[in-house]
Length: 218
Image (cartoon, rainbow, N blue to C red):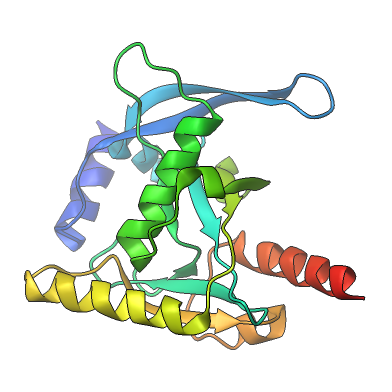
């Protein structure tokens, strides 16, 4: 099968890849002016290898991420480590949505908890799920759907200390952290100066946040 051949080749190139469970977006529609309904399907990461098979189609991926501001007007951007599927790529803390257990719903509360867990695992910031606010929905490469949550502001020193402690702890256990660097940016221009590929949603999210901040402070 062409999908399996593409996946096997990717695993040979990066042995850290694994075919774990994931959620794909099977549909999206508005119910009224303020309610967006997403339908979903259980897949594994191998499903997305179809993107590289000529003529094949795949469902869009569904992921969550977190806008983490600082108390001095910056946003946290993070770089994927060499062991990930996108080494060197700048993005927000977050990850693919995992399927709930059997018969459980996948609603905003579950997604909020997933976003909080991703933030803690990748940056060391332990933020309560109820303190995250659904802030944006993005649609990007391969029609992927991203649910972006806004976290409370944190002092810059806290962000750097928590991330450094997380990196030290992971490496002490012989593990490669999922993120190998963070940067704090104030504008799309500062974001553009970060060397390496950027995920497609990052610049629009940074632009929206900084413009909203300027409007609020005007």
